Image 1 (cartoon, rainbow, N blue to C red):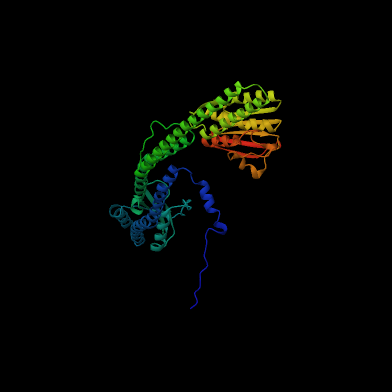
Image 2: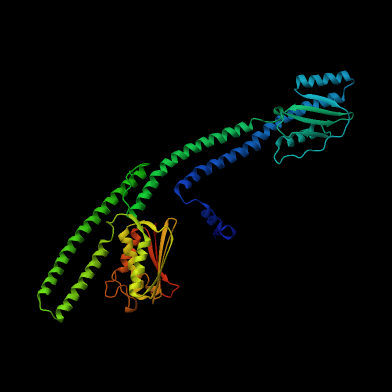
Length: 457
C-alpha cells in the first residue's frame, strides 16, 4: 500500500513572513510591560467577544421582540382606524391606544411624508422597526429613532390621512445594554488595577536583582536595601546571587593578598640584587645587569597589574577634561599632534584609576606608532564612547582580536609595547569589560588604527 505524504505548509512564508518581525519590533522589551500585555490582551479579547455576541444575539433578539410587540399594537390601531365609521369611533380608538397600549396616537390630515433623515452607521432599532412595519402594515411610513429622545415617532400614510404614533423608546428597544457594558468595563478596570499593583510587586524584586547584578559587573557596591523578596523562585535567585557575589569577592581578596605577598617577595629579591650590584666596581657588566633588573621590575609590575586587575577600586566620578589635557601636554613633549574633543557631559561615574589607565594605554599606543592622533569622547545618554585614532601602520583585520590576548606581541612595526610584555591591550579590555563595556578595533579614516571604548556612563 502506497502512502502519500502531504506537503508541509509553512504559513510564515511568502507574504506573511515579515509579520513576526513587525510584531517583535513593536513589542516592548521589558518584563513588566510584557506581563501587562499577557494580562490585558486576553481580557480585552474576551470582552470584545462577549460584547459582539451579546449585541448580535441577545441585544438584537430582545430589541426585535419588543419592536414586534409595538408594531403589532400599531398595526391593530391602523386596522381599527381604517374600519372606523365616525369621528366618535376615532376618538375612542385613540383613547384605547393611549390607555391600554401606551401609545400617543393622532390622526393628521393628508400630507406628504417627511424626507428620510440620515441614519447613523450602527442603529439596530431603525432597521428592525422598518422591517416589522413593512411585514405587518405594508403601507408607506416614516420613522424617527435618532437622538436621545425617550420616544419613537412613527408616521403611516393611510388613504384619508396620516397616522402619527409616539411610542416609548424603552418599549421597542433594549435600553439596559449600556448598563451591561458599563459594568463589564468598570469591573475589568478594577481587576486590571489590582493585577497591575500585584504584578508591580512581583516584578520589582526581579528589577532589583537585575540592577544589583549589573552594578556588581560594573564594580559598584551592593545596594543597602537589597534583600531576597518576591516569589520563592525570585528569592532563591537573589540568595544565589548574594552567595555567588560573596564567593567571588572572597576569591578576589584571597588572590589579591597572595599577589601582594608574591610582589613583596619578588621586589625584595630585586632590591637585594640592586644593593649587591651597587657594591661591585663600576663597569659595563654592572650597567647591563642594572638594565636587566629594570626590565625585570617593569615586567613584574605588568604581570601583577594584569593578574590583580582593578577590582578593588571603588567607583567614583572622573572628569575627562583634565585627563585629555594631560594627553595633549604629553603629545606636545613628544612632538606629536593630538586633537581632543568632548561631546556631552565630561563627568562620568567609573573606577577613576582603572579607566584612566585604560585610556592611557590606548593613547600611548597611538602616540608610539602614529604622528597624528585624535581622541573623541561622547557622553550622551547612558553610554560613554571614547575613540582613539592614529595615522600609524594599523593592525591587520585578522590580528585585531589576537592582540587582546595576554602576552601576544606583533611584529616590530606594530607591537603593543616596545620591550614590553604584550599586556597593554589585554589589561585595557579587562578594565572595559569590568565596567560593563568593551573595546573594539577597526580601521581609522586617518589611515591607522581606531580603538573604540564603549562603557556605561
